[in-house]
Length: 377
Image 1: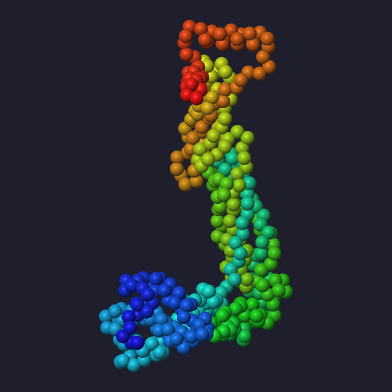
Image 2 (image 1 turned 90 degrees about the vertical axis):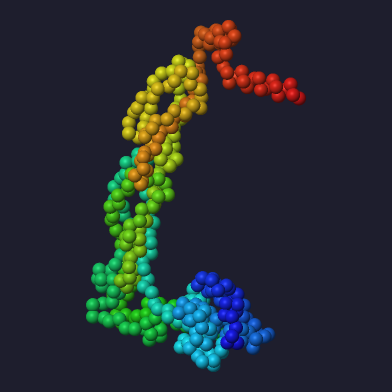
């Protein structure tokens, strides 16, 4: 077996990356694991040792380079003895298997307890469009877990000492063996902390943190939009027994505006104008977030025309140029007309159809298309 091609055993090319080798080994290991092949256990054990040995060599850069140049025996440091059934170069099978499957089965052979970092918090703030445009400083109250001042976050009384958990020996984990699988679980004695407090703090009962309400001042930058988040590092919940605190995320929600609709840096509004202004043109006042401005309406303006006020939109967060304000014109039809006004409009309409001039090109174009449609039926 010592002369077999290790790359062929794993089904990869000689130029395969470390990730490709690892994926191939994981797939084959699951396929040939003896616990999953009870009907052909001897064959499965032999195949399993073969692919495990191949991975043990090819996953190590130095051993792989030695194998590529000088062959299997040189890579294992043996003079012709051992083959695939030999020990794994000073390690063992559980080291390799734990390295590849540790994320599935609870960590490799070198697993250690982890500090229980505090949870992240999310606080939603509601802003007006004007506040989002100009920025705002807010004072907020956050109900959270803070470090216990009585024990300074240690969870122990002043004279008490922490001792290493005898069940897990400080690792915070206990392992159970099921065939070839080693499964790690939080230690039931210390609950994954790795240490036991002889005399817990009276205020926090050994957790190192207590419930409280924090007052924070938050500066909301100009240009924020709904969905934007501001991260305040270390301002979340305090960690257990002095572990690092989590983060606080300020999530922005901008309330709908009575006049403007926002899309990115641009603002949009609908602007009604009179029939006379649409015909003759004129100048009207338009509101913006920075005050009133005058807007010139060209003569013969049609409903739906968009007039742009450059730089009157929102200032983006990252210093780009300000957006524009785009005003969509809507011509308002007069209502509550008197008899005299109606008669004037009829006379005006008759005057439009005299002399053969085209005063309504869109209407004429539409009527011609309708006529062509019916003629083609």
